[in-house]
Length: 198
Image (cartoon, rainbow, N blue to C red; front, side, top):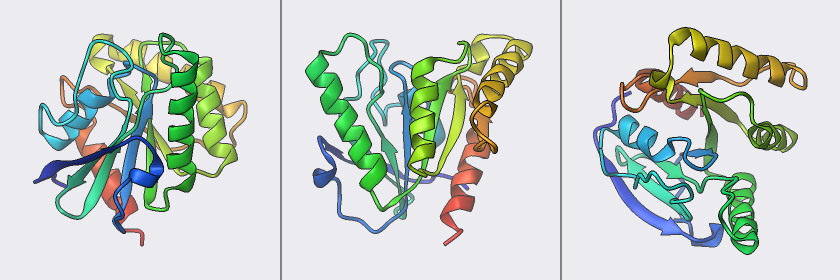
């Protein structure tokens, strides 16, 4: 699948403000500073579509982008931003949970994981929560250009083994680099396949 048009539609502070569409939505989420906005810009081929920042916690709203005039890419706030106040963290958690559990248009949630890190408890707990609630999701390991292929393979395998302690079957797993445009075709092909399963 090729993305020909990608337009920012709206930012929403809660699920009730999200656009009333019947189209498929594919959402992206991950810990703060995992490279979510950069990945979205890479996938769409639009450098400034999603706002990128070196400061964690930049995305605080649910951002909808209309793709090819037929489906939506959704940028969700990052979880686990330590510097946010307790009240703000709670607000973000409710926003994320409401969208993920209640948004009927959500076809798949992409959970972004920093490929350079050992398995983080916050990521494992979030993924476990998705499983408990039967949310369809896939995992994207980001920033693979920042280390050797061997190190990436090792880190991904460690993560897989950690998940297999609780999971009988693992979700689809993708490797990506926003800078090197790695993973773009595979991720877009997966979106296309899921979208056409109707």
